[in-house]
Image (cartoon, rainbow over all chains, first blue to last red; front, side):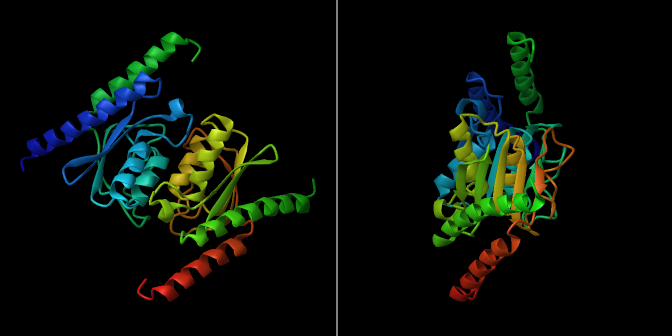
Length: 161
Length: 161
């Protein structure tokens, strides 16, 4: 497969993760979305539900991982690739590694919480028993723009924040 | 309060986490248990349910954090202390920090996955916006013995493992 074809496929799947991110925004959650792909099929989707459900756990990746475990009937998500619009935090990176996922494709970097290389490198750490291959910067501008618009709108609604 | 009194209180609460760990063992999950204490009251309990529920997320700490968020109606678990029989992994340490918990008291060290100082230091990392104070080694021998017995029994049942 040509490199341009591979890139198109990555962008196509990230487009699905971006659709998820927009769902989070609709209920006031930071717009981050994720999907999980196995053997060319989307087996799970998730968007950030932290504020909506008042659960610290419900980042987009965790919601998708929960659904993928159900779909496969297993806590091991081998041969699964996760697409997420923002670099995973330590909690999500830990879950990804423990589930033995194959690849993590993410959009925007996260300089404050990123555990895919920005602040920590948990996804490809040689200290752990498993590693996930990281591909970063897919639809990064669109992912970042969504976040920036969200925070700008929030500042306008509540200038004190 | 005298140091010996403080130690007794830590051991008393860890005894409750150990009770939880034994529940995990009863259904074939690695025996790890956790409780969350706020203002002198146990507000949540959890034990490892990963195998039982086939969900990678359901470590004892995550189960307890989920319950505590429900109990407080908030994803922020400020002024909460978590007692857990085994050093938290990166996933659980990430959740603890993001929930802005105050203190993590743990029993046995985990040289393979520990993110409270053994392999990584996520709980007290100056790189993150929040830190949890770590107290380690409370009822460590009892916590470790439970794990060792569990793995010994598993080897006896299935010598190939």
